Image 1 (cartoon, rainbow, N blue to C red):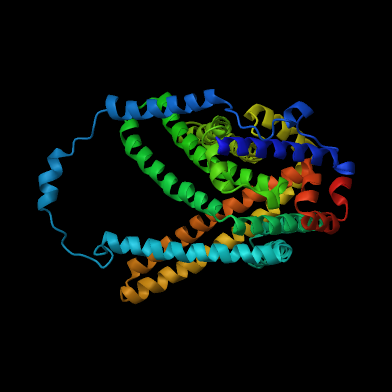
Image 2: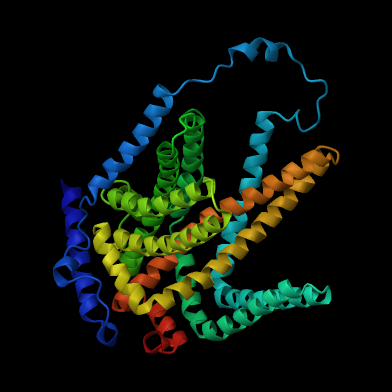
Length: 471
């Protein structure tokens, strides 16, 4: 009883603070995503878009029921005796590796990649602006060098394309360099919060790795049987089911992290206990319907693109259709990520959050695009470095443990590259969610940051030199 009363009083205090911060925004109060009545309900959790949950369950249940009841199981009985009596003619060192040894390899390589991920987070916290400048300049130099090489070898078409890319990167650097301080300041703030609440990274690893792998395995077992039904509509349903659940898994991470960052943005030193646990609970209950709806939009476009690639017909039309759907996919992913930030922070239905996102991107979309691109480059660079380091470790591991066996060295190197990139990007998804959340909230209610974290507020305003509102 006392717990519920304390939580309700905490919600009431949060509502009052948020409303007060909006009233004190002063010259910044030119952007309000919701009306006053809706602002009163910021901290009140309610079930949203429940119908989307039932739609998702219906698709998943139908997929597995059809796969395991209406399809014909494969008949392998004829080969069982032969396979049991067959012995390999020879055995390589690669084939002799036991499952336990493979497990130790994955654990060790995963540990190295995770250690590097958290080291890179610390580097981003201290040298965010320098990394962004370095990456942009490195891209320009790389395109310029490769274009010169192509021209020297008389590859004029490819050289011309690379020259165009070089000029484009130069123009982007000229236009974006003034926006680097804001992205760097938000990256610094987000990395501090990430280290302050490491449970967000644990949620990302749990869902981004374990749950996602479990889903891929379960879907694969059913899909082997389900694809026996050679009907386009059923193939569409199978692919849609896969992409929809995959998006839901990733967006649960995104909404959980965005909710924690939102609480820090508004409350900071007055944070409740275990904010990650409460944010995760809301993501898989009250906001789950909105997650399902937003995930469906992206999954539908991806499914259509996959169906076009699998179709028979004019190759030129397929290329055009795939390009168009690819652009729509990127737009949907970009829009959906920002809409789900509103879902996480304000707890509204997906359609209300989508309307707020439309207004945000209409008024300040270029800032969101540049912000994502600058931060994304730093995260991708860190993931590539992690992949290279772990791949090198895998190479020398195989070289020492298996006496330079070529097959083992190649396999261990590739495994290291994949594990390093995949796990590092999974951890970095927490960072990208935080940068989006801080950008959205600073665009909507900078006065809240002024009260919860005056130092960061002053740094953003000072480093950005007023250009945030003038451009």
